[in-house]
Image (cartoon, rainbow, N blue to C red; front, side, top):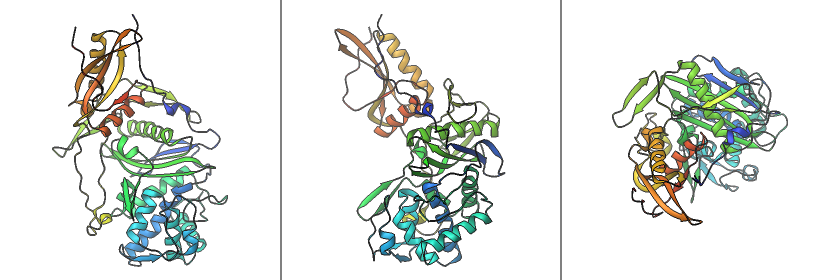
Length: 423
């Protein structure tokens, strides 16, 4: 008997963060309790996590009346010269404050950061002094700022604990604005920019993310997520790739939620707008992995179907309300895409494997159908175990979750073969 498996994805989390510069923290956002930490007070380069402090001071100016969302600021030649990433601003351009905010949160635009810093501080250097003073006032004792963007400066340093305190302060002090950190896309001029982290789509309950990267820092990430009435803040400094960063954050938040809720999670029925508290969340087998640079092992088990956190209406120019429109999104969508979870020499194990895969992610794959297709490879008939009835995004999300558990998965585009008849 020959059993052929067509694809297998290595779990990038196993590569882990670089031990020499890795740090992480998981904090209870309400109590400030640290649930998990590795090197929480070791100083690192914040990279674009710096922009969260820039946003803090911008929000402060908006709330005090010094700025309004529709005010326009003028871009200086110095601001326009900032290296990427940016919005392509030119000297003399005028940009609205709301677009600056979105540019910082989504595109991590260095030119927008410099422009707003000069507007509020006179110069970016003076604004950085204000940033450092605010950090001290918030208890960020290991942090010093030298610019508004996070571009390399050997004296611009922070800690994982301090970044968690900053996220906590942003949510506490500016609840009307905090949701900008959940914005997925942002259009400015003729271009549309995507958020650098896919955590918003891949980890249920995530309502804020900010990424950062310079060569000296590695890939950094700060995130906020809520489940079962518990909100956690996670911070990672020094991972090796964007995907490893996101997967590692999922693992840390899982560990934190398990500790904070004693295994009690919240599911959510978006169609009925009903929260369901579960003492035991049905899950697939637990995949435990080692993370270099971290103590112990991290389980990636309770990954629930992705959802779309709400975005603030005022950022779309629809007024100044902080009420968000939460929409249920059917990830499956009844589309023509699918996923493939294996290929076998017999029909029966292919059908069984597809059915078991559907049961692992019931909320995400409940409306899919098992479709075993046959193909001849090297003179042998191969039966492909597939689940069809997804849209492209739903197929990609499902494979991401299976890949995180080292389960082979391929996305299947429309018109990729007819079902094989049962023998």
